[in-house]
Image 1 (cartoon, rainbow, N blue to C red):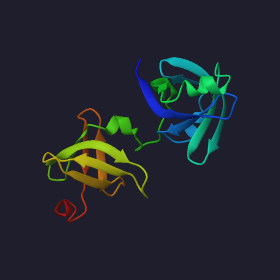
Image 2 (tube, one colour):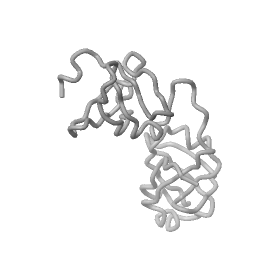
Image 3 (cartoon, rainbow, N blue to C red):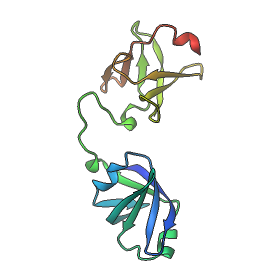
Length: 165
């Protein structure tokens, strides 16, 4: 069973065994869960709160600061069954990574290396065959058909985007 990593424990908090988590997904994901993998072990989530853009978790069987500090550096994961159903034309980043990107003329532009999510809109980071990176805004005007069977994403690039490389 493949685990999907959604965060990493970066520190202990206070004295009662809470851990501070750097989230790799939306903060709300943590309130939707009852159990979570901490490394290879499953823990029940007893409480979730937030501190800025960090998540503070109280996990079962973690009763004091020493136990919480022992978890520092471990990744937090969920199973595919824990993933919510997405609306149409919305995809998990992990499913897009590695897909070929094809322009309107049928030319292979490269492969999706990552999706940058900390901007006004998502940016598809496409690694070109020459090693350069092409960033394409993740909006419907530029991202066309996503074909999971062929592992292809069809794009309509804004004029002049390729010349900016």
